[in-house]
Length: 371
Figure 1 (cartoon, rainbow, N blue to C red):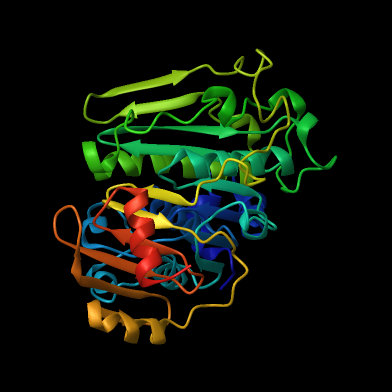
Figure 2: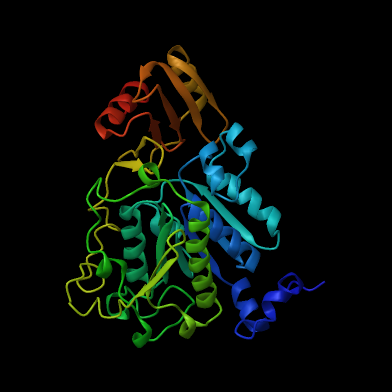
Protein backbone atom coordinates (compact mmCIF):
# COMPACT_ATOMS: atom_id res chain seq x y z
CA UNK A 1 0.00 0.00 0.00
CA UNK A 2 1.35 3.42 -0.98
CA UNK A 3 1.73 6.19 1.60
CA UNK A 4 -0.67 8.20 -0.55
CA UNK A 5 -3.50 5.63 -0.63
CA UNK A 6 -5.26 6.95 2.47
CA UNK A 7 -5.51 10.39 0.81
CA UNK A 8 -7.01 9.08 -2.43
CA UNK A 9 -10.24 11.09 -2.23
CA UNK A 10 -8.28 14.26 -1.56
CA UNK A 11 -5.81 13.58 -4.38
CA UNK A 12 -8.76 13.37 -6.78
CA UNK A 13 -9.29 17.11 -6.29
CA UNK A 14 -7.71 18.84 -9.34
CA UNK A 15 -6.13 21.65 -7.30
CA UNK A 16 -4.41 19.18 -4.97
CA UNK A 17 -3.52 16.04 -6.91
CA UNK A 18 -0.47 13.91 -6.08
CA UNK A 19 1.90 16.87 -6.15
CA UNK A 20 -0.21 18.82 -3.68
CA UNK A 21 -0.49 15.80 -1.39
CA UNK A 22 3.26 15.37 -1.36
CA UNK A 23 3.60 19.04 -0.47
CA UNK A 24 1.26 18.49 2.48
CA UNK A 25 3.30 15.51 3.67
CA UNK A 26 6.45 17.64 3.57
CA UNK A 27 4.81 20.53 5.46
CA UNK A 28 4.88 21.61 9.10
CA UNK A 29 1.97 23.40 10.79
CA UNK A 30 2.09 25.03 14.22
CA UNK A 31 -1.26 25.07 16.06
CA UNK A 32 -1.21 27.40 19.07
CA UNK A 33 -4.08 26.67 21.44
CA UNK A 34 -5.73 23.27 21.48
CA UNK A 35 -9.23 24.12 22.63
CA UNK A 36 -12.31 24.52 20.48
CA UNK A 37 -10.69 25.90 17.32
CA UNK A 38 -7.36 24.17 17.84
CA UNK A 39 -8.72 20.64 18.16
CA UNK A 40 -10.74 20.99 14.96
CA UNK A 41 -7.74 22.48 13.14
CA UNK A 42 -5.35 19.77 14.30
CA UNK A 43 -7.85 17.01 13.51
CA UNK A 44 -8.48 18.32 9.98
CA UNK A 45 -4.79 18.80 9.16
CA UNK A 46 -3.78 15.41 10.56
CA UNK A 47 -6.42 13.69 8.45
CA UNK A 48 -5.37 15.75 5.40
CA UNK A 49 -1.80 14.47 5.77
CA UNK A 50 0.16 17.50 6.95
CA UNK A 51 3.43 15.72 7.70
CA UNK A 52 4.38 17.48 10.95
CA UNK A 53 2.05 19.05 13.48
CA UNK A 54 3.27 21.00 16.49
CA UNK A 55 0.63 21.71 19.13
CA UNK A 56 1.13 24.06 22.07
CA UNK A 57 -1.46 24.46 24.83
CA UNK A 58 -1.22 25.38 28.50
CA UNK A 59 -4.49 23.95 29.83
CA UNK A 60 -6.11 20.69 30.95
CA UNK A 61 -9.29 18.97 29.75
CA UNK A 62 -12.49 19.81 31.63
CA UNK A 63 -16.01 18.44 31.30
CA UNK A 64 -17.35 21.65 29.76
CA UNK A 65 -14.79 21.34 26.94
CA UNK A 66 -16.42 18.20 25.52
CA UNK A 67 -19.34 20.14 24.03
CA UNK A 68 -17.07 21.53 21.29
CA UNK A 69 -13.46 20.30 21.62
CA UNK A 70 -13.43 17.30 19.32
CA UNK A 71 -10.23 15.46 20.31
CA UNK A 72 -11.18 14.84 23.95
CA UNK A 73 -13.44 12.46 25.87
CA UNK A 74 -14.59 11.80 29.42
CA UNK A 75 -11.52 9.75 30.33
CA UNK A 76 -9.33 12.80 29.67
CA UNK A 77 -11.49 14.75 32.12
CA UNK A 78 -11.34 12.08 34.82
CA UNK A 79 -7.55 11.86 34.58
CA UNK A 80 -6.98 15.65 34.32
CA UNK A 81 -4.91 15.17 31.18
CA UNK A 82 -3.31 18.25 29.56
CA UNK A 83 -5.03 19.16 26.31
CA UNK A 84 -1.85 18.98 24.24
CA UNK A 85 -1.05 15.51 25.61
CA UNK A 86 -4.56 14.18 24.99
CA UNK A 87 -4.72 15.72 21.52
CA UNK A 88 -1.31 14.37 20.56
CA UNK A 89 -2.26 10.84 21.59
CA UNK A 90 -5.55 10.98 19.66
CA UNK A 91 -3.94 12.44 16.52
CA UNK A 92 -1.30 9.70 16.46
CA UNK A 93 -4.11 7.13 16.50
CA UNK A 94 -5.89 8.99 13.68
CA UNK A 95 -2.80 9.14 11.47
CA UNK A 96 0.28 7.20 12.57
CA UNK A 97 2.14 8.22 9.40
CA UNK A 98 2.61 11.84 10.48
CA UNK A 99 4.74 13.37 13.24
CA UNK A 100 2.95 15.11 16.12
CA UNK A 101 4.84 17.23 18.64
CA UNK A 102 2.62 18.06 21.63
CA UNK A 103 3.83 20.62 24.17
CA UNK A 104 2.13 21.39 27.47
CA UNK A 105 3.26 24.98 27.76
CA UNK A 106 2.20 28.60 27.68
CA UNK A 107 3.08 30.02 24.26
CA UNK A 108 4.91 33.28 25.02
CA UNK A 109 7.75 35.52 23.85
CA UNK A 110 10.35 33.31 25.53
CA UNK A 111 9.49 30.17 23.57
CA UNK A 112 7.59 31.34 20.47
CA UNK A 113 10.56 31.18 18.11
CA UNK A 114 11.53 27.73 19.36
CA UNK A 115 8.07 26.25 18.86
CA UNK A 116 7.76 27.88 15.42
CA UNK A 117 11.07 26.43 14.23
CA UNK A 118 10.48 24.85 10.81
CA UNK A 119 6.81 25.84 10.66
CA UNK A 120 5.31 26.64 7.26
CA UNK A 121 2.05 28.06 8.65
CA UNK A 122 0.90 29.43 12.03
CA UNK A 123 -2.64 28.53 13.06
CA UNK A 124 -4.64 30.43 15.65
CA UNK A 125 -6.59 28.35 18.17
CA UNK A 126 -6.41 31.09 20.79
CA UNK A 127 -8.81 32.98 23.03
CA UNK A 128 -6.84 36.18 23.69
CA UNK A 129 -5.39 39.01 21.61
CA UNK A 130 -2.09 39.20 23.47
CA UNK A 131 -0.96 35.83 22.17
CA UNK A 132 -2.46 36.54 18.75
CA UNK A 133 -0.33 39.68 18.52
CA UNK A 134 2.68 37.56 19.45
CA UNK A 135 1.90 35.17 16.58
CA UNK A 136 1.42 38.16 14.30
CA UNK A 137 4.84 39.57 15.27
CA UNK A 138 6.42 36.20 14.57
CA UNK A 139 4.67 35.91 11.21
CA UNK A 140 5.76 39.37 10.03
CA UNK A 141 9.35 39.13 11.24
CA UNK A 142 10.01 35.62 9.93
CA UNK A 143 7.79 35.51 6.86
CA UNK A 144 5.39 32.77 7.93
CA UNK A 145 1.72 32.77 6.89
CA UNK A 146 -0.63 33.22 9.84
CA UNK A 147 -4.27 32.09 9.81
CA UNK A 148 -6.21 34.07 12.41
CA UNK A 149 -9.49 32.78 13.83
CA UNK A 150 -11.87 33.48 16.69
CA UNK A 151 -15.30 32.18 17.68
CA UNK A 152 -17.77 33.01 20.45
CA UNK A 153 -21.53 32.66 20.94
CA UNK A 154 -22.92 31.68 17.51
CA UNK A 155 -20.34 33.27 15.23
CA UNK A 156 -16.75 34.08 14.54
CA UNK A 157 -14.22 35.38 12.06
CA UNK A 158 -11.09 34.30 10.23
CA UNK A 159 -8.42 35.86 8.04
CA UNK A 160 -5.22 34.80 6.29
CA UNK A 161 -2.14 36.97 6.82
CA UNK A 162 0.64 36.87 4.23
CA UNK A 163 3.21 39.34 5.63
CA UNK A 164 4.79 41.99 3.44
CA UNK A 165 8.49 41.33 2.79
CA UNK A 166 9.84 44.77 3.75
CA UNK A 167 9.83 44.07 7.53
CA UNK A 168 11.12 40.51 7.27
CA UNK A 169 14.26 39.73 9.24
CA UNK A 170 15.85 37.90 6.28
CA UNK A 171 15.39 38.12 2.50
CA UNK A 172 13.74 34.70 2.26
CA UNK A 173 10.76 33.70 4.41
CA UNK A 174 11.29 30.88 6.88
CA UNK A 175 8.16 29.19 5.55
CA UNK A 176 8.35 27.02 2.46
CA UNK A 177 5.16 28.70 1.27
CA UNK A 178 5.95 31.33 -1.34
CA UNK A 179 3.96 34.41 -2.31
CA UNK A 180 4.64 37.62 -4.17
CA UNK A 181 4.70 41.13 -2.74
CA UNK A 182 1.44 41.77 -4.61
CA UNK A 183 -0.15 38.79 -2.85
CA UNK A 184 0.86 40.09 0.58
CA UNK A 185 -1.90 41.18 2.96
CA UNK A 186 -2.28 43.55 5.90
CA UNK A 187 -1.27 42.00 9.22
CA UNK A 188 -3.53 41.52 12.22
CA UNK A 189 -2.52 44.84 13.78
CA UNK A 190 -3.40 46.68 10.59
CA UNK A 191 -6.97 45.49 11.21
CA UNK A 192 -6.98 45.54 15.02
CA UNK A 193 -4.24 47.99 16.13
CA UNK A 194 -4.95 47.43 19.82
CA UNK A 195 -6.56 44.69 21.85
CA UNK A 196 -10.18 45.38 22.87
CA UNK A 197 -10.44 46.84 26.38
CA UNK A 198 -11.04 44.31 29.15
CA UNK A 199 -14.71 43.55 29.55
CA UNK A 200 -15.69 45.09 26.22
CA UNK A 201 -15.80 41.86 24.21
CA UNK A 202 -18.06 38.85 24.63
CA UNK A 203 -16.29 35.67 25.72
CA UNK A 204 -17.37 32.06 25.96
CA UNK A 205 -17.73 32.74 29.70
CA UNK A 206 -20.19 35.60 29.25
CA UNK A 207 -21.92 34.75 25.98
CA UNK A 208 -21.55 30.99 25.63
CA UNK A 209 -20.44 29.24 22.47
CA UNK A 210 -22.19 26.99 19.95
CA UNK A 211 -20.12 24.02 18.82
CA UNK A 212 -21.09 24.23 15.12
CA UNK A 213 -20.00 27.89 15.04
CA UNK A 214 -16.53 26.79 16.15
CA UNK A 215 -16.51 24.02 13.55
CA UNK A 216 -17.42 26.50 10.80
CA UNK A 217 -14.64 28.96 11.61
CA UNK A 218 -12.04 26.23 12.12
CA UNK A 219 -13.07 24.62 8.82
CA UNK A 220 -12.45 27.95 7.07
CA UNK A 221 -9.03 28.23 8.74
CA UNK A 222 -8.06 24.65 7.89
CA UNK A 223 -9.12 25.08 4.27
CA UNK A 224 -6.96 28.19 3.88
CA UNK A 225 -4.03 26.36 5.48
CA UNK A 226 -4.39 23.49 3.00
CA UNK A 227 -4.46 25.98 0.12
CA UNK A 228 -1.24 27.56 1.40
CA UNK A 229 0.57 24.28 1.96
CA UNK A 230 -0.39 22.88 -1.46
CA UNK A 231 0.83 26.02 -3.25
CA UNK A 232 -2.64 27.35 -4.10
CA UNK A 233 -2.00 30.88 -2.81
CA UNK A 234 -4.12 32.37 -5.58
CA UNK A 235 -7.18 30.51 -4.22
CA UNK A 236 -7.01 32.06 -0.74
CA UNK A 237 -9.92 33.93 0.78
CA UNK A 238 -8.29 37.35 1.10
CA UNK A 239 -11.11 38.93 3.08
CA UNK A 240 -11.86 39.20 6.78
CA UNK A 241 -14.45 36.42 6.79
CA UNK A 242 -17.20 36.38 9.41
CA UNK A 243 -20.29 34.27 9.94
CA UNK A 244 -23.13 33.91 12.41
CA UNK A 245 -24.56 30.41 12.02
CA UNK A 246 -27.66 31.24 14.07
CA UNK A 247 -28.56 34.45 12.27
CA UNK A 248 -27.64 32.90 8.90
CA UNK A 249 -25.37 35.81 7.98
CA UNK A 250 -22.03 35.69 6.20
CA UNK A 251 -19.79 38.69 5.47
CA UNK A 252 -16.49 39.19 3.72
CA UNK A 253 -14.86 42.52 4.50
CA UNK A 254 -12.30 43.81 2.00
CA UNK A 255 -9.28 44.71 4.15
CA UNK A 256 -6.73 44.98 1.34
CA UNK A 257 -6.17 48.69 1.93
CA UNK A 258 -5.78 48.51 5.72
CA UNK A 259 -1.97 48.80 5.55
CA UNK A 260 -2.03 51.84 3.30
CA UNK A 261 -2.54 54.26 6.17
CA UNK A 262 1.07 53.56 7.16
CA UNK A 263 0.34 53.51 10.89
CA UNK A 264 0.67 49.80 11.72
CA UNK A 265 3.20 49.42 14.57
CA UNK A 266 4.14 45.94 13.39
CA UNK A 267 4.31 45.48 9.61
CA UNK A 268 4.94 49.17 8.80
CA UNK A 269 7.04 50.43 11.73
CA UNK A 270 8.69 47.08 12.46
CA UNK A 271 8.06 47.17 16.22
CA UNK A 272 7.70 43.60 17.43
CA UNK A 273 6.61 44.54 20.94
CA UNK A 274 4.97 41.24 21.81
CA UNK A 275 7.77 39.09 20.45
CA UNK A 276 10.26 41.16 22.44
CA UNK A 277 8.21 40.70 25.60
CA UNK A 278 7.71 44.44 26.00
CA UNK A 279 3.92 44.11 25.93
CA UNK A 280 3.58 40.74 27.69
CA UNK A 281 1.74 40.28 30.95
CA UNK A 282 2.54 37.91 33.79
CA UNK A 283 -1.12 37.09 34.33
CA UNK A 284 -3.76 36.00 31.85
CA UNK A 285 -7.49 35.58 32.41
CA UNK A 286 -8.66 32.29 30.91
CA UNK A 287 -11.79 32.23 28.75
CA UNK A 288 -14.68 30.39 30.36
CA UNK A 289 -12.68 29.25 33.36
CA UNK A 290 -13.18 31.89 36.11
CA UNK A 291 -9.43 31.51 36.42
CA UNK A 292 -6.13 33.36 36.18
CA UNK A 293 -2.87 31.99 34.84
CA UNK A 294 0.35 32.95 36.63
CA UNK A 295 3.53 32.82 34.55
CA UNK A 296 6.88 33.09 36.38
CA UNK A 297 9.20 35.88 35.30
CA UNK A 298 11.89 33.44 34.19
CA UNK A 299 11.34 30.40 32.03
CA UNK A 300 14.82 28.99 32.65
CA UNK A 301 14.38 27.62 36.19
CA UNK A 302 14.74 23.92 36.99
CA UNK A 303 11.50 21.88 36.87
CA UNK A 304 9.52 21.92 40.09
CA UNK A 305 9.35 18.85 42.33
CA UNK A 306 5.59 18.34 42.04
CA UNK A 307 5.56 15.36 44.40
CA UNK A 308 7.16 17.39 47.17
CA UNK A 309 4.82 20.30 46.62
CA UNK A 310 1.79 17.98 46.68
CA UNK A 311 2.93 16.65 50.04
CA UNK A 312 3.30 20.16 51.43
CA UNK A 313 -0.10 21.22 50.13
CA UNK A 314 -1.86 18.17 51.59
CA UNK A 315 -2.44 20.10 54.81
CA UNK A 316 -4.51 22.62 52.87
CA UNK A 317 -6.63 20.36 50.67
CA UNK A 318 -6.55 17.41 48.29
CA UNK A 319 -3.77 17.49 45.68
CA UNK A 320 -2.44 14.89 43.26
CA UNK A 321 0.21 14.86 40.53
CA UNK A 322 0.58 12.68 37.43
CA UNK A 323 3.98 13.56 35.97
CA UNK A 324 2.52 16.31 33.80
CA UNK A 325 1.07 18.55 36.49
CA UNK A 326 -0.17 18.95 40.04
CA UNK A 327 -3.88 19.52 40.53
CA UNK A 328 -6.12 19.95 43.52
CA UNK A 329 -8.60 21.95 45.54
CA UNK A 330 -7.97 23.96 48.67
CA UNK A 331 -10.13 23.27 51.70
CA UNK A 332 -9.21 26.56 53.36
CA UNK A 333 -9.18 29.01 50.42
CA UNK A 334 -12.53 30.14 49.06
CA UNK A 335 -13.04 31.67 45.64
CA UNK A 336 -15.96 33.43 44.01
CA UNK A 337 -18.29 30.43 44.24
CA UNK A 338 -16.50 27.74 46.22
CA UNK A 339 -13.03 26.39 47.00
CA UNK A 340 -10.14 27.64 44.91
CA UNK A 341 -8.43 25.08 42.64
CA UNK A 342 -4.75 25.01 41.70
CA UNK A 343 -3.13 23.47 38.63
CA UNK A 344 0.66 23.69 38.75
CA UNK A 345 3.04 22.75 35.92
CA UNK A 346 6.74 21.76 36.21
CA UNK A 347 7.87 25.11 34.76
CA UNK A 348 6.21 26.97 37.65
CA UNK A 349 3.25 28.14 35.62
CA UNK A 350 -0.04 27.88 37.51
CA UNK A 351 -3.75 28.20 36.87
CA UNK A 352 -5.69 29.56 39.84
CA UNK A 353 -9.37 28.71 39.40
CA UNK A 354 -12.03 30.43 41.45
CA UNK A 355 -11.11 34.05 40.86
CA UNK A 356 -10.70 36.47 37.97
CA UNK A 357 -8.64 38.94 40.03
CA UNK A 358 -4.92 38.83 39.13
CA UNK A 359 -3.89 40.28 42.48
CA UNK A 360 -5.75 37.58 44.42
CA UNK A 361 -4.31 34.89 42.16
CA UNK A 362 -0.78 36.21 42.75
CA UNK A 363 -1.37 36.18 46.51
CA UNK A 364 -2.50 32.56 46.46
CA UNK A 365 0.47 31.59 44.28
CA UNK A 366 2.97 33.35 46.52
CA UNK A 367 1.50 31.81 49.68
CA UNK A 368 1.23 28.19 48.53
CA UNK A 369 3.77 27.85 45.70
CA UNK A 370 6.33 30.57 46.39
CA UNK A 371 8.29 32.88 44.12
